[in-house]
Length: 483
Ligand code: F0G
Image 1 (cartoon, rainbow, N blue to C red):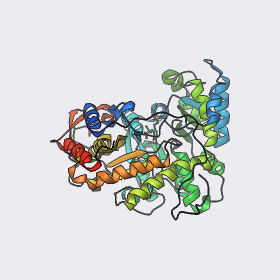
Image 2 (image 1 turned 90 degrees about the horizontal axis):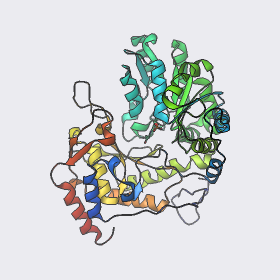
Image 3 (image 1 turned 90 degrees about the vertical axis):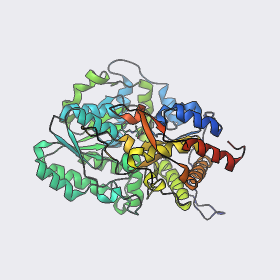
């Protein structure tokens, strides 16, 4: 995106600074077929087939558009079990972006989390974070650790104009450390672009204050940088002290202050894979033994070399504001359209995607009938668009089997980078608006098969009553023979 104003339009339209040269055909099934497909998928958008989806907005992970330079780099991958030149190029890119020399590879972000948890989490220990991510928490609790969330309370208010809703409550962080005792804290983890509360960023000021507190108490500080490129965009555009810093300066300041940085290269780096990096070799040494055990040798870590080459180039592209602004600016466009239509959506627009606030869209559906999942199924019926439930279904039940209700019942519409056109984004806004106007037709869901761990991935549900048939019928009445 670039600073280009339009002559003939009052509204500002995000303008791509790239062109599309490889395309993939999409299919939009008739509404009756869509109804059938979502029911066959147990009302779980993860169980839909990609061929039955018009806009796949389930994630921005591993599905971003690659640049010509990334594709070109893939053809010079050096495929060797040990000592590959490709890994040296990844290390050089990590050094350029973060200034860190010690790099461990992992096959994706959650594999890095597994290594981190194995190295530092022991039964009875705590990890403090602004907010958990599903896989992060699963690894920590699997090892007998506990997650404590310390996001500032502004982060849980669906609509505010606060620019940094992912910030820690610093007072609470200090208080919690004192109460638990620093020796009980395995690490403090800052999640940039806080995923589960709507891709909301953390300010540079807040991140630095968190690391100061960690240093004061002698606790490890960890940055989950998976969504850092969006977060850096927001720092530069929303935080006055960052306006005149280069993106690289911001990445380097963070790397200088956090003990350990890890990320999913499916997000940061527009590729696949995962990385753990640190200035201090002590940390990578403590984690190193787990890489060959779980991932692969230290110079590929379970990654495929061509993805590593794409990551090396993609990481350098993460320094380029014209590239990293594309996601947030398309998301802001979608959020603004939805907001104009009166649809309850998380504000301000964050990174990752637009997040529909389902507690407000369907206030009469209780948590235990899964409002966010119901809206997701309804949206697929209405549009062929696949989003992701980020509400109670994405939580884990308590050890005694009771439901843990999500703080926010969200349906996430992720915006893969450099993938969709603005007309597709407009289609998305239009169909969400139709669904919102017909929200009284949306009903609840109940479990048919409920897995114990990460149930949102493969659990199956069914509609309570026959509301989905009524919704499809109404669509047909309103849209005639339109798809
Ligand atoms: N941390 C954050 C903040 C993430 O958003 C993700 C993945 C991970 C870690 C795990 O990385 O997928 O490479 O294993 N988020 C994806 C999403 C799955 O759709 O939001 P991974």
